[in-house]
Each structure stands twice: as structure tokens, then as C-alpha cells.
Image 1: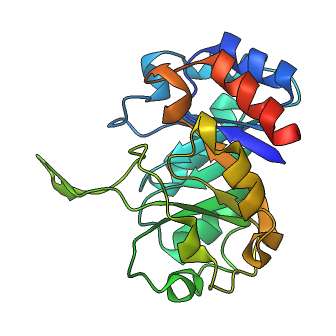
Image 2 (image 1 turned 90 degrees about the vertical axis):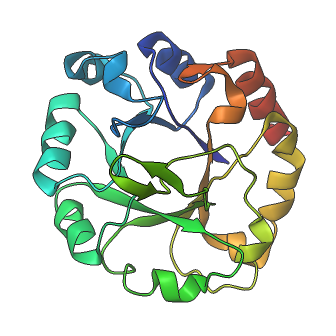
Length: 220
């Protein structure tokens, strides 16, 4: 089972993930995030990270030119769009690099309706928890991870005809639940799982022992 570890801020930890066989490392390019990558790593240092691991840049409503510049400057392999990007915006970026479009799913959402205009615009989907709305100086926002558990059952009756990442508060204790979900019919297109805050010592600093144990449990 493929694994993506998001919110990376230390090149040495990315190297550790690569040594463990983790498939994807996520770098957050959203300045409001506590895991904003440029607080810790300059672009040229991200570009120098080598190995088999794929570097994924996470953006929230960023201009297309800004995303593409970051792809080149930082040597990214994929882009994850985690805001309210339109299908047209996604398509422009997908002409240049593989795109994952994240959808924050709530209890009453019509999932198939949310996805329908994006099938031809992106390469993969990601499903995450709908976070609470936060009031900021620029108005209400509801972006970013909260560590809140995603109710995977919301996906079970949906027709999802595209590869997807499963995210949303996955914890070290969830290995068996992940393996069980992987046997559900809807999971035939589950490409990877995505882990983040439940595997941290504090924002951006991963607990590598928890990650190792989780990976071992997934392999059993």
C-alpha cells in the first residue's frame, strides 16, 4: 500500500522516509499553515532532496504561475490543490505536472456531484475531512488539515472512477482499519493513504518511530 507523509519541514526526515520506502513526501506551500515549508527549508534545498520518494507540493488557491514556478524552483514531482480551485485552473496546471485535487467531505455532501467537473481536469483525487470554518482578517476560511478523523463510510456508496488518496486524521492505531477499508469495493481505486498530524511530535516534525510501526503494521 502506498503512503504519503504530508507536512514535511526537515530534509533529513524526508531522507528517512525514503529509506523506509515511503512513496510521497508532502511540502505545504500555504503561508497560513503551521507546516509552511518556507519557514524551515528554502526552495533550493527542497530541490536538492534526492531519492525514490516523490515530492508533492500542496497549494491553496495559489495563482497558476506561482504554482508552476514552485514546481520548477523546488523540483516537485506532483502538485496537490487543496483549496477551491476551479476545473479550469486545475487543467492549466495539469498540462505541466500531475495534479491531485483534494476535496473536503462533509456528512451531507453529494460526493459524486462535487467530483463530476474534475474528472478530466486532474490526475487523481484526495478525500479529506471538512474542517471547521475559522474567522480570519480576510474573512472565513476552512482550509487545511485538523487531524479530525474522516468518516470513510461516506465514500462507500459513491461511484469514484478515478485513483484517489485517502486522508483525514489517520492515526498510528488505524492500520487495521485502513486495511479493512482497502477491501471495500470503493477502494478499488485507492492509490495511496495520506498521513500527517497524528504522526508528529509537533507541527512539521514527524515521530519517525510511529511512522515505522505504522508501516510495519500495514505490511502484515
